[in-house]
Image 1 (tube, helix red, strand yellow):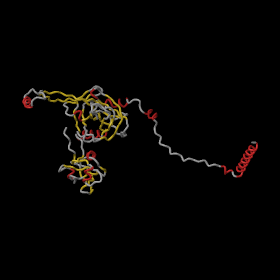
Image 2: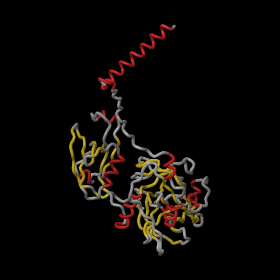
Image 3: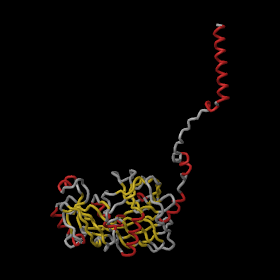
Length: 385
């Protein structure tokens, strides 16, 4: 044991001596280059849930106080003729009694909706279906004043109507023309649901650009989960600053109540309709006088196309702008002004966005060949009130 200890001590002594010599004569041998890791890219800092919560307002009372005075209740009255003969009466007997006086009586039906004062000069924007067929329209303000309104103009294709009221010092709700809406933005719906009085509900923008719903001819809806119920139609959809971002128009519901899917006409589209009705009495839209049809996979194969793109011209007016511009039945419209078109809804919306008299270039597919046609748009016929 003593011998092993001596060997260990001698080995340690020799190692220390060697280390001393090396550190004295070649100190660079002992320098160790540390391994330096390449710096990681700094990730973009995202706001934490706590910081988002601190930024979210605890109340939207300020926005409501700005917008609510300009949101009005609309009461309409319509006189209808009601037969006093039972529905299950014999047809011959019914026809006999209907020719006699006194077997029809006039009743009044009422309807409730909402509207938005968009000009201090008395212009009120609402939905056409709110006032359609009404014999009398009464606008009631939040401050208790009421006035009989006259219809300045309507646009059946967008389901919008402009009313005129003669009242002084009207509150006015400004259109939002600054930052565009985004999915997830908080919005507030103000209206008169079920006739209970002015009500405000809150939600978010669920989707943008909703179309192909079969509600209007031209659709580009804001979808929101803010509760919109019968009576809210024509009311205001506002942002958290109290600016008008949309006109509440429709709901998706099987029961008649809100299921968290409501639709509003964007403020920009409503403002354009308002401006043209005030200026011309109707809305000017481009028109080709064609009957388009969506392309299917079977039709694409029949026309020798690789994919189902474009819109088929299934029919057209003989002397319409499209026929005068060289379009033919069976042509496939693939582009408008160089932009691809894949369904009839977008084709009609793109054409309607042009002013009558403007020139437009269509890229078509005809008899196995692509070609371009340039034509002058006409004025889309205005639907009767």
